[in-house]
Length: 602
Image (cartoon, rainbow, N blue to C red; front, side, top):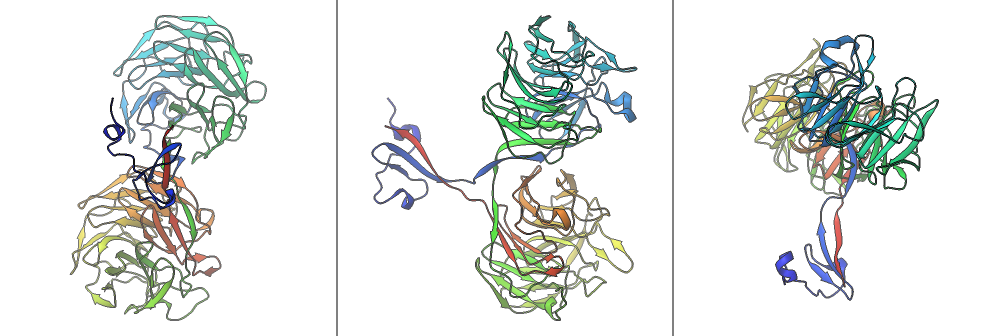
């Protein structure tokens, strides 16, 4: 028999004192338990933006096991009829690829199965919205017609695989509760739903399925469970709706989106007994394709027709903002560098106006700010890169024109060094220290010019390198001068465009969930935060995982034009504008995580 050490890689240790004093990674035992103490980020459930479909559409269907391996097919876009009704796209967790079309174009159809083995069931086909009994089977490459369903219908629930499926409910017309079972060869009529309905969502398998929501003469919150023979009514959703999405199993499921009316973003989780509201989708939507599982779901398309994709994941790092020490001088339009416990904030302006604010520099130790030596040139709306002891500050507003002045901080004082090639304000920066930085975007007035220009700093001078793809100002960025991220800003209008820099060129990647300007960021090219902005978006915080943005917990106070610093698990937001005045407030973002886990009980 294997020993505990052979299985776990370490022996159980009897540690004196208390568990709270045990070292990271130690095994602990008491009279009844073996416990392991370790750290990892606390987690939550969250929706994030995925790659856009190639073709905007609504009333499409999908199949797939998770949000990294799915397909969608069919759909409706009146402006693009030939391209949408039969179109099929495959998703790899990042982007959609067009693959072979359905043989018969249609929309409001049903889908079941996986990315490589799916069914497209019934639906409406043009011209004239003809109700179809047609069924097609997907083998990972192409669609083949198989035996028809018995009842032509649209807007119905489906579940199962391409060899063992269930189709239920829908509009025939009128609404129906008809249920049919597929054995891989033919469809057989079985017992009806208890309530005739359309726009219901389906999930599960052929012998253990759920029908969720729908529309009869009213919007429904009904949930019905299939046991392989008959349907049983269970506890209702909290929010009645139709044309929603559902994923998961009969005992652990998700229901999300739908038309209430209007469209909703509400997401609910099912534990086999009851539904609980959890985190909302980023965008209220309905009549989309839903695929995946209760832990890894996908929603693609929308009504009206859209290219949007959202991904649901469990285990997303969770954090929260708390109050830190105030700056000594309230101000906005300042810059910041460093970490949450060793930061630098400098420049800015103050409303109501206070002269001399633009030269001020303050240092943060994780608790309080201390005034240190001033900038040589006072300014606001500047950018920065580096650490608390090795920082570069560049560009800015002198006012209302744009500066090229660059200053280097050595931990004690500022020194003027070579200017930017393009004078500008409201630009963004990234970089590891005062010898290696990147400057991008920005604005000059007069004349009113927005920039795509990117410049790289080698410790001595700036060199123009490849431009951003989208010109903008009031954007944010983080990273190094060989691996950076640029996001948000104004084109105009405000944008959520995100671009990734590889040391040579910029590539457009997934957008922020919410377009905004005058925001800040913290982190690296593959793990960061974006936070703040004017108006209703002033508290929003989004987390970047290297692929997509996920909305996480908000700032405590809505603000913009503030300094950001730190990482995606320990960030800082200092100063800023909280209309109608500038603020000295500092907020700290933390993702907690010391965990104790009981491994065995005896």
